[in-house]
Image 1 (cartoon, rainbow, N blue to C red):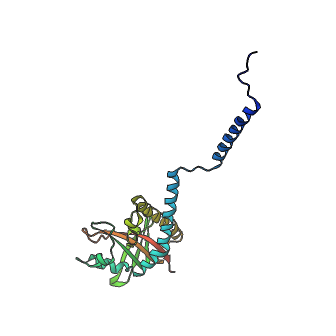
Image 2 (cartoon, rainbow, N blue to C red):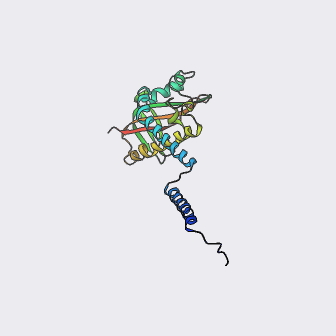
Image 3 (cartoon, rainbow, N blue to C red):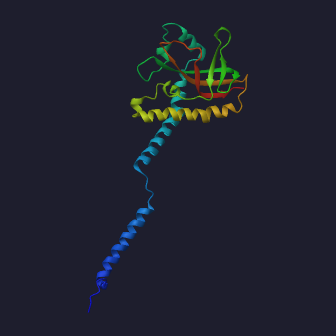
Amino acid sequence: MVKNETYRSPKKRKPLMYGISALIGLVLLYLSFDIVPLDERAETNAGEEVAEMVAVYFEETLPAVMLDAPEPCSLSKMLKTEDSSGWEKYGQQNAIGNRYYFLVSGQGRIRTVQDDFITVTFGEGDAECTFRISTVYIFGNEIRDASGKLQLKEVGSLPTFNSLSESINERVRTQVVAPFLKTVKVGKTIQMQGAFALNRRLGWDPDVEIKPIRLQFID
């Protein structure tokens, strides 16, 4: 009689079936989990961290720092003076060099509305001055660096530090400028808070443009 090689006794088949069932169970358990790559998870955590830092910056840090921000005309007059102490008193730097970042706060009247900026006149009489306020090209590090409260060494990494600028600028574009432009009109009075940068070696720039932090209509 020829022996059937495929035959398995009931006792021998049971462990085999148990093993197959266990393997199928493990596969189903594996597929039930949402597997997220480590790099994607790290990116998500970093994004949440940046969002939280930006929220704290706008809701707590900037309001406190803005209490000491100079009026635009007084600061511009000070910075136009040769060897002015205003650079050290009101300017901030995030690296060695000639670039300084400034905060300003004041009430002014809208003079013109252009495609990518508005002009606002602050002060009165001999103390009057006019600045451009960006409404489209809100990029760069002015808002991040002008407070002096966000430092690379404290943030920890350059990519996160750069992401802070991007997120800060995006918040200004969507939450500050976008609603403001819906009702902007020449002649309206606004309360403005903003930031700008200057190169000390080149001195005062009459074409300097303020990046807004807050734009609020007074009337």
